[in-house]
Length: 389
Length: 101
Ligand code: FES
Ligand SMILES: [Fe+2]
Image (tube, rainbow over all chains, first blue to last red; front, side, top):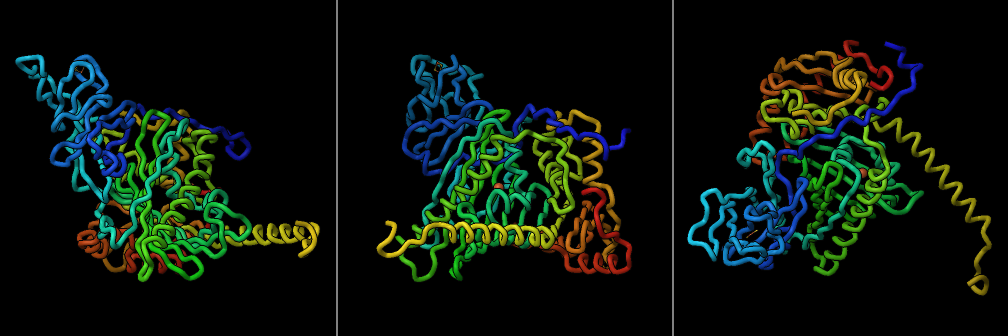
């Protein structure tokens, strides 16, 4: 092999997977689907129909009718079933056609793709597996105590961002990417740790806002303690402790996504804030909104990078970087057949990154930026009470 | 079925370098679980477990079965951490990376 230190390095774009991940996927807040109408959700290269039956349960089916391909999302909810707009075949949440109003019998083969559903932390989750396995309820994300209790937590603020031109693995890579928090999100990571095990991947981070930039997490008075775990390929719970000028707020951030195509996905994030003692609802909701905006900005900072970057199978790392290769090895388990899962994809891996060296450089850079900002201010015309207005 | 497939041989070699190279076997002084350890610097540690080692560590086993294990499972085992420190002190684990891995 040629000497790699003198060779020009090329990016290996690789080929993207021809399938979508196996696991629980979140379609959004359950309440959004409970208005008696069929809803359309783009997912897994197609479209799903979601509706509420008379018992208040949500059904999820492939969006296209098995009769002549009518679009069920444009149909009508009739009792427990969704009726197709084309010839009114009535489909139940178990995937069976229950009734054809103009026919004596329903063909025995009238079965469509039905998804198993669970309501978890106020959201609708569905099981997706290209191999068609039964849902694995043992690996559901945990239930967050009291999160549905509006006395304890504020209402969810739920946002969606469609991403085009990137595979959702770009989003997953964030789990290990220590340095981007400084450059993209304007925070100094002071502590950084990863643990991957079984179907979970966790990031622990403590960080402090940068004083020289605004936006994102940039704010010298802001300290974040974050523990974020992916439960499966697409649903992350992020427990956050935000300390702003000594005022500590507990925030829960759900970061989930649905792959919509081979290089597109719908990012969804929800935020709720534990109501601080002695604060009225209005103030608590205001704080919730503020943090939703802040983390929303954070995602948009990432999106700007993803939409312009190249896919890369062979990232070149320096010794301060996080374990990108190990994370991707973990993520791979959701894309291969269950029979092909290798033990090392699920074996426990722990990583602690040294942020001291990086922080020395970053603090110097920030100090330099602050000096420059001061100098620019000093050279501007001075405002006095009767001067420039 | 194949998923993210590299298109070059060198990528496969990169995958090996970053996930396996320089891992030193360390045995826990208490439970004798064997893990792979790598240290790119004084305060940076990678620990690669195997299913056998995980089953052997009483600390991990206990936390996994705990009621609120969902969050606890991530803490590291203090006895293994001490064993790694001892291995570093003995000079059994080289500190420093080789061209980023
Ligand atoms: S296509 Fe749906 S009822 Fe005919
Ligand atoms: Fe990010």
